[in-house]
Image 1: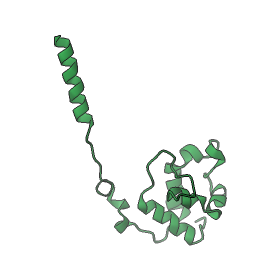
Image 2: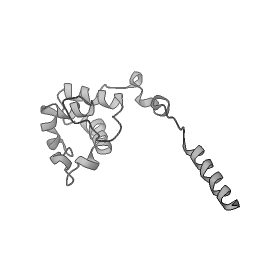
Image 3: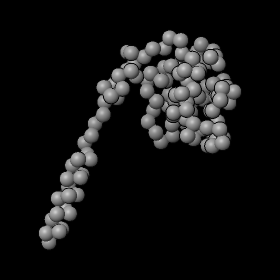
Length: 125
């Protein structure tokens, strides 16, 4: 009986420690606060490619190609920019499959950087 009480208390303690954890993205990642989002001089090499590498290549990298979509490499990205599916998917626009699938939507700042880059011609810079 003592062992059962001990296990119950241990389980209850673990549940208490692991629950009710609340993150506020703006406090944890202040650089991504939309008020602090620097969209000047957004470039493929310094902004967009690292964003895609971190958020998209796991499923849509070269050699993985889930859903027959490869976003790795500037040339591979162009059709998805042209048809609007890249920005539509990351914005969770109802006409497109929301990405990352089953994951958290990209930060407002990262979406804004992608929008600016695309609106400025999606240059390979």
